[in-house]
Image (cartoon, rainbow, N blue to C red; front, side):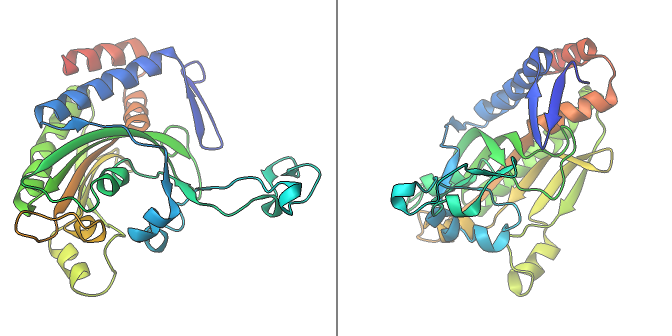
Length: 279
């Protein structure tokens, strides 16, 4: 697929055909967002370290975190000479304190944006973000260091959030079938909930995360029910004073493209299929 994209070190460059394919897919997901009444928003690619700490990110996802840091200048006590050690990475002693982390999921900024808000009813937001994760390995379009995530988020009463997620469960599977993708919906773990205690037991009885899986190995999207976790951490309240519930539908756009390329051999056929299904 070298004529369609190049990937190295978890970073990918898409050629014109795949840029068009991504736009077609995301355009369809944006249509779903409009139909759900979701307001489009765009957020920074970085999140403050203090904000990440407030949602227990460093406890739950330390292995995924990719932080930013400024270079320490000689005038600030930093060493002189070349910054890149062994031609591969900036030496640790050249870096200053890290105040920001790269986003690893598009929805985090939605909840932080609504911090200290009081909701009179369900609120829907859609956003897209370049996300970054420090994985133990990378694999073409399937597993990337930097990738694109579209999310459709609901904040509000528990029933409204569950209805939002349920509405997309069938919708996503049916759309994928029109593209020739046979997805299964599989329960997955959610590190935002403790491994022990009442919340963990509740998660076993009612899954908080379900993934849309292609070919038994590739999750190309997910349904995420966070219960009132972000409502509590971000002080987002309902009309009755209780913490808001949140949930999101997430689409990994490069992974959708990977699934289509693995299923169909001709890019023109793929583009035609997606354009027709999305019309």
